[in-house]
Amino acid sequence: MITRRDLLKSLGTLGAAGTVGVPAILLPSTAQAAVTPFTLPLRIPPVLAPSSTDATTDYYDLDIGETSAEIVPGLQTQVISFNGSVPGPIIRARAGRTVVMTHTNGLPDTTLGGAPGNVTIHLHGAHCPSGEDGYPTDYIQPGGTRSYTYPNNQLPAPLWYHDHTLDFTGPHVWYGMAGLYLMTDDYEDALNLPKGAYEVPLVIQDRNFDANGQLIYTKNMNGETGDTLLVNGTVQPYLNVAKRKYRFRVYNGSNARFYKLALSNGQSFQVIGMEGGLLSAPVTVTSITLAPAERADIVINFGSLAVGTNVELRNTLVASTSSVYKIMQFKVNSTATDTSVVPATLRPVTKFTRSQAVRTRNWTLSRSGMNGNWMINGQVFDENRIDASPRLGDIEIWKFTNQSNMDHPMHLHDVMFQILTINGAAPAATHAGWKDTVVVPRMMGTAEIIMKFTDYTGKFPFHCHVLEHEDMMMMSQFEVLP
Ligand code: C2O
Ligand code: CU
Ligand code: CU
Image 1 (cartoon, protein in one colour):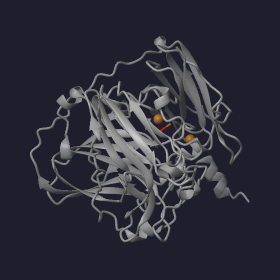
Image 2 (cartoon, protein in one colour):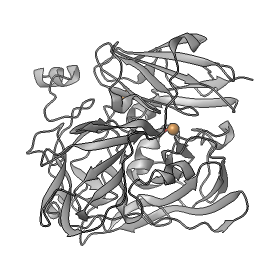
Image 3 (cartoon, protein in one colour):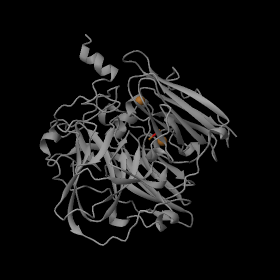
Image 4 (tube, rainbow, N blue to C red):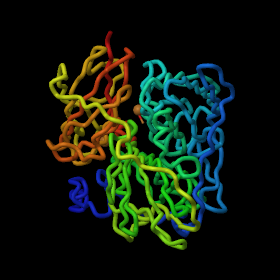
């Protein structure tokens, strides 16, 4: 029976308890009950050392396998990890220097959540040959090994590696298969942004745990959301900070949840970059919304706060009583000198203009019925169908129109793009640089993006980054032709 509440939910008008795109059902979970917010120190994933290195290339070895992690204190949670770490270890890359990541798949034929043990690893945000991109059916079978070669022939950016298995990306990532890949270059180093201990990655994810501390995954076709927030795999942690500036590399690594990040003291912060790297200039805001797969490179200055002050990072998309409101806490507990700066010019972004585009492609986003598959141009993913064939060197405009009742964060492989319009208006300054994911607003909302296809021919997917929408077929592909 469809109740009025269900109808309202499906129309997206019950927003308060939900996320922007995805109505959330908030159930208390064991982890929620077991962890008092801000009692666990923020975990920082280890930086992986290369197993070898030569004049051009750094080589990394990663073992994928079922391991356990103490996420809820006193309980062991079964996860799928890279080298035993959830999120996976951090890869530090430099633009222009090649990275080879060799993955050994130690999963059984059927793994956690009943998902298959075959995997494929995609480096999200990478500009690399099609064959290195982690195509959804280019599997590493259980027991298998393969190397991916990333030329890093692109602007430095906050990338991340994650599983991309056809129909099962959602559970694979939910159980742990994601890690950071932070790229930089000499230009960025010379800017003297906060670095070392003052540059901190924050991967925000939501999960549900059962009474034994095990993850619950239901493949909710609206998008899987959890009632427990994790940052770098730590439930609602705290971080001791000094009175000075910090650079936070914030990733929305959630399957489906959107967050609006704000500080509890109302303090502003500077956004210095997004998915594709640095903005042309810092943008001062008091909040920023991140859809799944979006990243924000931000600088928070704790310098004017007294030692002893606690500041919370909150998700103001939900009510203050929600279990997913409090993300983490910064405890200002010391002083420190600060010679870092946020320069007025970061990295100039050369803007594409509409007149450079050789064509415009139109894409609709919709659903087959109330509970059916998610579709692009009325079609579900088919690995044997190519829906666009740009040529190398072409600049194109893509216009997405969202005919459904949920927001869709659309992500393209291979390219970084610029947003021309959202609902017909220019994007916010924070969203005016290089991006790889754009939110297309629900209910006939539109987004126009512009990009240039360079260097690599071959097939690349594009899809909604709500992972259950992707798994439920909201994916298509383009093939770059010579
Ligand atoms: Cu984050 Cu197609 O991926
Ligand atoms: Cu990607
Ligand atoms: Cu979607």
